[in-house]
Length: 285
Image (cartoon, rainbow, N blue to C red; front, side):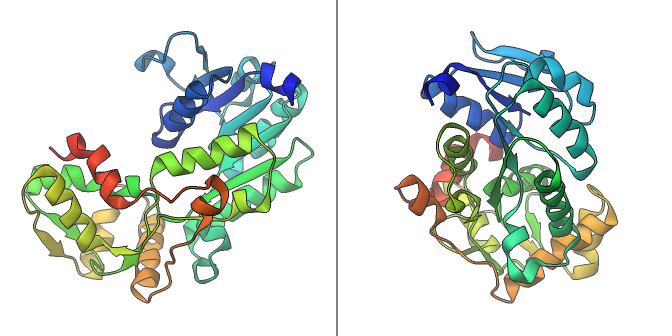
């Protein structure tokens, strides 16, 4: 382990909501770390961090970033797996930590388009002859609520499909903490468990929490399924929009759990949505 600690950890996609939290924790722990981004010139990284321009969809661009790295955190899709694994193997990377989705091990999410996309990616990594891969599997990301900020500013309300559906959104810092545990410690099956926040809460109540944080109530407007499909389809392919609605239908049926994964692995309670909203108050102001 001592030799590995001298090798930098590479954070691919360090500009993302989770990637930047992974970077921050590794720096707090005084780990040697480097980052890559598609366009690194658009963001200022902390001093002393090696920065590489790299894109998982262009495997050759990963080569300089991978060379000399011990372990790697990344986002990936099915189409990029072979190239990522080939470059990681050639560079001698010892472990890949993959941001995946808890839906892969959530029984009632089987068959969902987005679930199966993550499953295909995990399966491709598992089958490829390269370094071991540890999937990190958040079920519902609290950062999904950031999409409400634009709607609030432009319409004065938040339109919701299935507003009373219960989920347990997980804070990006908890996802990052799981990733760091996988990057810097021993791998246990619990690290790939279904990662959630501490309690289930409705979308309507989540909006109310944000309203309390910003100091004014936020109106909620309930969407029909056709209207919700049309709205989501403005920002994503229609099949992905339908998959999101299926997740919400499933949650409305009571099938979106709260797990103890954070406490089991990290030895502390998961961060609640109230703290997430406080952390992101400026995004809704």
